[in-house]
Length: 333
Image (cartoon, rainbow, N blue to C red; front, side, top):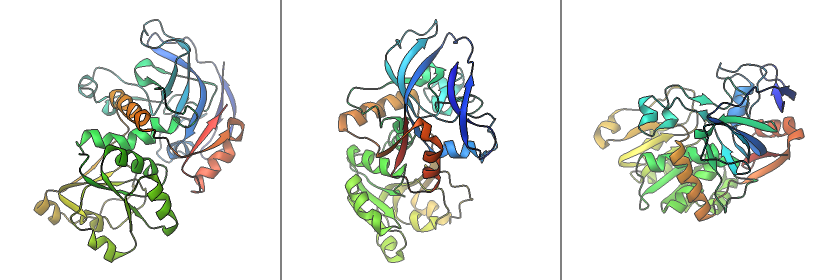
């Protein structure tokens, strides 16, 4: 039996829950969970904000632990090996995206907490292809968020061939944004943080920003016109997107990493004149996750985390919902 914490209704408290996972699939592994980050997606799934939650729901998709068992066809992972698991727990492995290495764009992905039980538990299962060894040099107690937030902000560097000599900017210094500042600085870019909070200016500089711009100051935004190859938005609220588009250099990109629900209100004319792009991306393929982990280990990059015990799970979820987390929350056994 697997011991977990589950919500039994939308928005409900997480309560102790046991389930029998059945026989281990030949291509799967079972992970003994040591730590698991809490992502805003866990809140959204608990609350059924996306209309795809099933109950009882066991959230948790930023897991760090050791391999407890392997399926008969698994050869590259061994019991006792320390690994991580993120948003995807498996891929179809036959669609054009999988066959071209873009597993994160799989036509029929198996998501760790969608239609299956996640890692707010003592054990979690996933296809071996979606489980990555944790490199030496990464702090296992804080590495979990790398498997979701970390890869989310790293993936655009690879997908869009961002150069170390590029000027880039990040909107929002929170769970995603604070990792983006670290990664983009280590990549070699000149990094600017857009923030509406003066209190976060020094934090942003400490995390890797070379400079900050007050996003509430129209004059400051106007002064940044034509600067950035990439402006990465990590927020989930509607902003004056035209003002940020104006800060792009020719062929620059406004890229969405946060789930902004409202439709974008942008003028298309600057896109015609300057060949701008608007885009978004999800997490990353296993190959890109491995590259991100190796990069983080080489440069000593770690999410800034707060820690709770698993039996404090509802307190931890409430802390995340309050918006006061600095900057990611990790549960530990």
